[in-house]
Image (cartoon, rainbow, N blue to C red; front, side, top):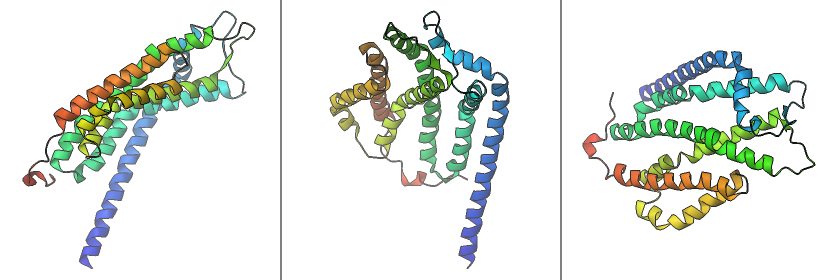
Length: 252
């Protein structure tokens, strides 16, 4: 009976801690959202800049819905708040999970967590500053002569947010590679032996995400393959034999 009460108390304490950390995450996200909402129109203007600079004369970004001029910047502001708050949100997740990890697992996971945040931001920045200009130039250049390109602001936002997440996740390849090796699902030798298949798969994925021209596909595929090779090197360096049994206890 005492063991049941102890287990119930432990579960309850975890739920209380989870509630507290979720509340902190929501409060911080709401605080970050306030300036984002105040500058929502400026954020949207910045977001459409890669397309607007390449639109031909007489073309512009339009709103096909009555509420779109308000709701689209509002949606962007909320997404930006989550985007900027991501390090703190992941820190709350880490603080909740870390006490249950072994010491060597914490030493291994913390650098991966920081790296994943930096790589995700790097992927989003790469998409905005490198890929978007080339992509939108391609779209504008391939528009038929008798068609005027008038992009809807809501569809544009959905499209670029999807690409932000696609490139952000694509840049997580080194982290995913290290985790796969660490968990024993694959071996470094296997990753090195199947380079050709991975390269082919990367170009297929890039063909689906980017416009159908060789330049845009290469702009995504080449960094992805470079990150894959980086992941192999890091996995070979970081993943070693399991630590001694004396290190298997958790720290208080």
